[in-house]
Length: 69
Image 1 (spheres, rainbow, N blue to C red):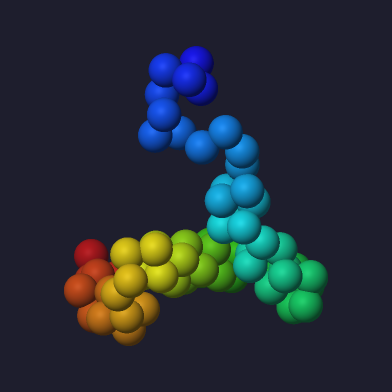
Image 2 (cartoon, one colour):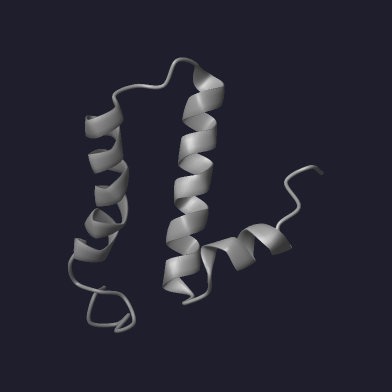
């Protein structure tokens, strides 16, 4: 399958490095006090990682995303 789909990497290093930042933050700060904190932390961390991958400013991305809808 890997030889037929050359756009797919043969390793999971990118996926592992994507979640590494989440693991470090969780180890340093510990757990959140409730599920809202968990959701907020994960949402903003995901938005930050997405902005980095697309080489745009995290703040510019936040300005475009209307969080109040």
